[in-house]
Length: 296
Image (cartoon, rainbow, N blue to C red; front, side):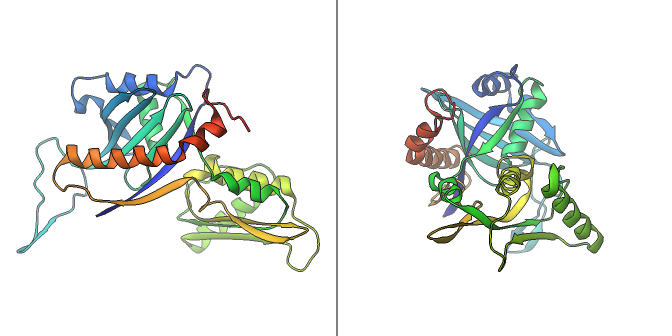
């Protein structure tokens, strides 16, 4: 039994000259006759687009991280022995995805330890600088609705192993920079920031809180290992906490996968990703419409 988490991202073009994502996928996949021709080193990891097929207005595929260093041993009845790998080969860590041409949304197995969505997009860009995209994580339908019903009185974030946090403008940026500096000095692996009104009446500056949440939800900060991202809003009827980390649009399912059979293994995972996409496709179309443009 294998547990699969599927996340959904709207693919945005960073530059107007960027082609639609399906063109980039096809360009990369057709760049060579063999899988090795499609290999690229991205941030010290070898990635390659292993499969790509068209299914009406969708593209299904698999991106693979090829582990060629720090190889684990085989644990057998005799103990630990060297894991046999063919010359030029490595261990394949595989991620299935399904991309909708009409909505420009991708559903992808979510495992940053294997291949993150950002590394996947960086891999495409390595083939052609015009393949320049950024992922915007989709949030559950009710998350922002709940948040915007009131005014924020508290927000909190927890980041594990923060790395190279980009600058954020204004007071929020100063708070993040100060927290990271303190964590660096103290050699602390986790940053936790909490700002609240406490017993004081009123609310926090909503625009600043909005910027803070957007930075870690869809901006440069969303690539960090964020363990907590929430805000409490107050209305005349009381207060409610919105957990933006748990309110990302996602599906988690347990599936049976055949061991030692790469093609059948992919087929099972791809079917799971497709089923998850179908579950939320009506909502995705409601948000982005047939043209991929936000409609609400």
